[in-house]
Length: 394
Image (cartoon, rainbow, N blue to C red):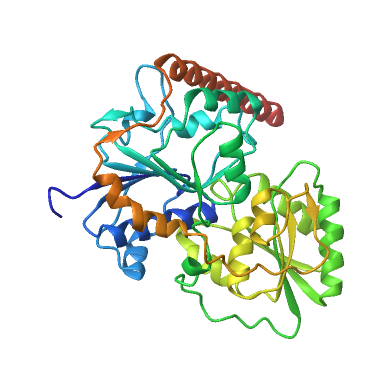
């Protein structure tokens, strides 16, 4: 590799045990190597490693990208902003990084990885990014800061509206990284024969107000309509095989009268997992990327809308949580909306030509404040887990 190879960093949720985010990472690296085959690529890794040797062979990468381990920030000692400070360009996203559904300070968590701005610092382009929901506190903070990106594309109309109307960022729209064009490049094994009966694929996530009983009633209703004698649960997100979605799916499956099985995604079995998903006859899909995969395989779906991004995939307006009792089709991709991949192909070289980043960054005081808040939240959670485990042991 040339000593002048451009250095590209990728900040996202890759290798965190989420099928969708792993596919986004692969799609991003595909685009970078297509645009700049000589690139020196590094990415933020959350430890649940993909099989990069197999991916390099199947996808024709010139070299294996380097995973930079995610580590907890320690005030004054370990700073996230240093991890990618040697890069020429940083690609931020895609996926739903900037939201407060899971953590009150999640926007800081992700934006903390952006190095300082100014001459000689990496340019930052966000693409395929989903925004929201974001608390009013954070919307005011982000508006006061200004846009952290030198160029930005978000993946749906709701994210565009949120970015422009609330923090006042300048953004454009693109498709999600995981579109039909990308998914058709993933090798799918031949459909497995399951005998005489039909199999209902189910991809759920735990969500406030969506009970186990609600899920059981819906699955049993659809299985009767579709004459399915088996339900196969696909859990697209877990932490080393455990987590809320695993527990929720297991609780639902145990309550069903029909035959059930469950498969939890593992990063080193990505192709096998998608192949198994593709072998069902009909599906109930709550997850965005399970819907995209089943749509590409022309598998009929009954979606569950828990967020605007899922409704948008099916061409529907989001009106709140909705369990859909009829089959819906994912419409053809809009020709006028660029793909996330195309934004990298078209813009990455241009970003390399500009040696100055103009994006907004947290002040030193903000960083210290949020680091201390994160530390307090983490310590509280660990103490609660310790107490819970001791009580169980007693």
